[in-house]
Amino acid sequence: MTRQDYLLTCLMEESAELAMACSKAIRFGADDICPATRQDAGKTAKQRITEEYIDVTALYLMLQNCCIIHMSQDEVSEAIEAKSERVEDTIKLALERGIVK
Ligand SMILES: [Mg+2]
Image 1 (cartoon, rainbow, N blue to C red):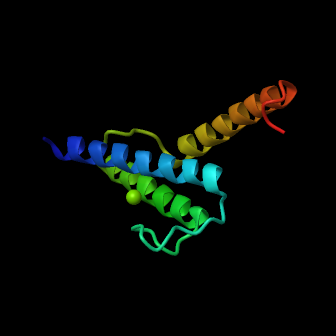
Image 2 (tube, rainbow, N blue to C red):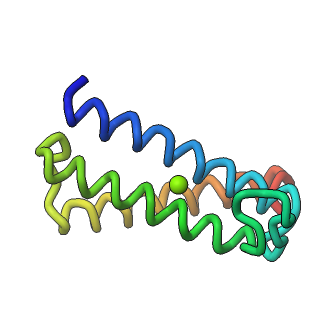
């Protein structure tokens, strides 16, 4: 396994943890506090989402340093804006169809 493989594996794991934190916020509410028996005891769903987002971002930046990701900060900012616009378009469609209220 190379360093790049290792970082990609970590990014997959952290992405899955972020997805799980988002899922729990939907199922139990964003302000839900993790039960005392769990690893994240006392943290809200919002806190867990933030922590996992930071983990994902850290791995992304480490992969950028490995030269696997070739985008400037301006390109990343433009891509984020374009993605946000696409998501807003799909939210409008979901509103029209009554999926999102
Ligand atoms: Mg994590």
